[in-house]
Amino acid sequence: MKTLYFECNMGAAGDMLMAALLELHNNPKEFLGRLNNIGIPGVAVTTEKSSKCGIMGTHVKIKIGNLEEAEHEHEHEHHHHHHNDYHSIEHLIEHLNVSDIVKKNALGVYKLIAEAESHAHGVPVDKIHFHEVGEMDAVTDIVGVCMLIEELAPNLILASPVNVGSGQVRCAHGILPVPAPATARILRNTPIYSDDTIGELCTPTGAALLKYFAKDFCKMSMLSVDKLGYGMGKKDFDKVNCVRAYIGNSVGFSEKITELLCNLDDMTPEAVSFAQQLLLQEGALDAYTMPIGMKKGRTGLIFVCMCRTDAKSKMLSLIFKHTSTLGIREYTCHRHALQREETELKTELGTVRVKTARGFGLVKSKPEYEDIARIALEKNKSIEEVFLHYRSKAEDFYGL
Picture (cartoon, rainbow, N blue to C red):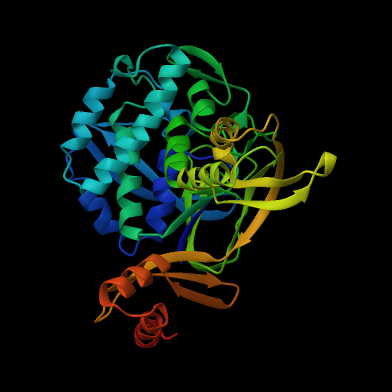
């Protein structure tokens, strides 16, 4: 599975993410030419080579008119020029010369920022003025990253835990703690940390891009790397000030998950099944039961829900609502898994969805049972006949 991994040991800003992705692109010069002609008013984007601690990478320079943003990284989003409200940003993005998926993703990133700013300042979303992220350079960062991700076309995007820096930062509203309130809000339920680096390492734009695109924030699992990209910030620290991006093929992955358990002895099997299916529909990784013996000789069940950490609150609410339990136990564990993808195989009998898993030197594949059963009913054949027909076609198409 084609995987993109962001290493955020020195946080992330929009220009740093764009620079790292540019180094992964097959034709950065041609891409920049297109980016400069999508319709963002007064913006010119160029790149330059940059060295940090002896490591070479790319730094993105954005000029608005004849002016270059003075500190276009880290605290660059906190300069106070003209204001843009949420609807003007929406209108601008919707009329850019980019694909619908880029527009959708860029608006999704801005929605995260708007909601965080709304919460931080106590102002409705439609009244938010983007003092810190509404400038044309930030629009360019966000749309540029969305375009690059569309063109690199990874199947999976992951990121490391994010270093947010420490100390204080000056912005349009005054001096704020690091991470700034909007950044802290965006990065809820995301692993972040602070080391001895003084300064704002993760900006609202960088946080929102990572939060929107990354499926998980974790250590890099086994990855066969094709390309590396170094997106450099402007400031100098005693550590390499960059976002490092890897792209390659995953050979399996690990992630931190939450396991929620409770004991049940006073529900009907139908009610338990209803709760189990509802949790799966709402995004649980798995939901299952195990028989146990309880006090007074009663038989009972351990009801188990496995979910991603950011879905824990939702799953807790659903379990309390749809089961009779009065208490839930919680455990955190690591799951090692194969990368999965779903494709379609067209056969003379009908189309079958195929689930394929790869990693750890293995390839496993099987057809979707519901499709096999549907074809068996439609064609008046047995399950085994349909499966054997699928298997013969799968050998040709998938090499199974």
